[in-house]
Image (tube, rainbow, N blue to C red):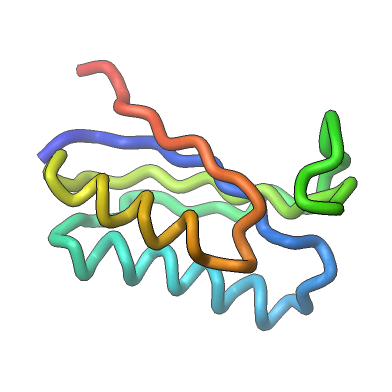
Length: 95
């Protein structure tokens, strides 16, 4: 399994419970694809550098996890269609 780090931005108008549910959904997505989440932190609401999908602010979430490379395509596919996620960046960590 490979180490990955992902930063994703959630819509700012969501309530605290909804934010927690989105984070749980993403963590569950990773686990269902055979991965293991080692760290998941909600970093808080921050102003975006530019407007994304009519949003000027966003709630940043940082996740570190291990998963096989074959599961990354499915994780990215689901993130793209999840309405609560504005943007994401997924990178492979160096060994």
